[in-house]
Image 1 (spheres, one colour):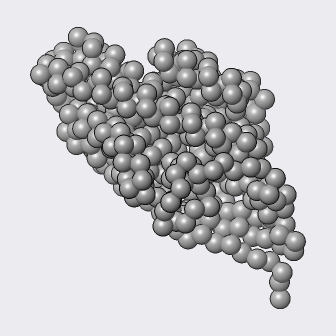
Image 2 (cartoon, helix red, strand yellow):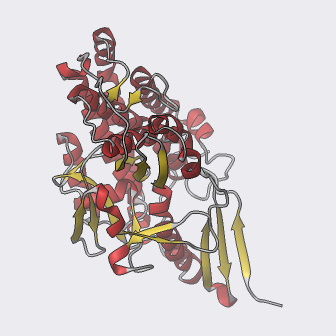
Image 3 (cartoon, one colour):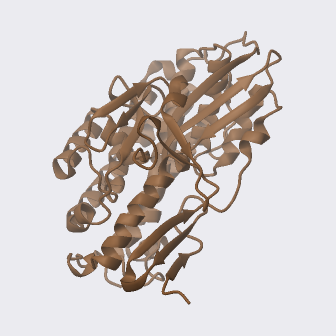
Length: 438
């Protein structure tokens, strides 16, 4: 007979993926263990092996229905790095437009569909109310702006990638198709409404943050390391070096993606099929890091666009740098949405975006090794490919956002569980009145 109590949430809902949460409590509700279980295998590294390298960018997007475009682009960059290929500038701009459109739509989906119901209706509202359907019913204007943002991003992805889910237009050495001038002109007419909806989203996010500030600054505050791409210190989701920040806020590494094996450690937990990636020089678990929106905003000195940089400064005035506040990931998501919107406008206004010089004609398969890195909405995404002299993919290593985040997720859950079950924090903090009463 044991006094251990097990709380199991299976499956975890409102999650972009599949997982189970297990909380083990001892006598007096002492938290003994927290496990975030990823209980399915994917085998994509093995799917890729033995195939022509140029097929990888068409297979890799199937890894994720939410983030197929980052997988497509990371895969392309890995192939091009292995074969010493540099695409034309116009192709790079099209790829940047593609990933920014995905960033916009994905962040809109996450904020409105996965996060907003808890804050709008209150975290203890009935699950029957605390969902996106209730947003549609009780806040139709908010729902419309959410849908329009998601639609804008997804349809722009379709214009560039041929499909919003599992794109096909990126090829080693560039892009299959150029953007037509009439397509560019049509998208520019849609930009003002998109920007208006971005401003409304920012206003809603600020209302949420101010209302829940005590919760945000006290619950699940979890110091970790952080990593993310920057380009000379500026926030970038397509290219740059990988930065690592320690829990005190010091930048301890700034390395090329090809050097990742020096800094990425891999821990294999017994309770999950997903490995825990951590900062190798300090070991595990001390070197647990997190990726995703807050991590990127922590490691970057500044954002790449003026309105987003102003939003980042405002966020830092409220929660500091580094911010270890788990709930601030939602705030950082809005900062990145602003940057995505500004970058989309800038790229569409760039005359080179409709250049027909978007692909090389002399890409030759060869033996080589290449690493491609981009930022998926949920965190740093890395593809490492090795090809033989016939251009066949003989080895693949994929480190996805989940791997970078899962140890940090467990650490944050442990902090929150101890606060809730042992310290009774929910009796000590004041929850605001729901924004909408049902």
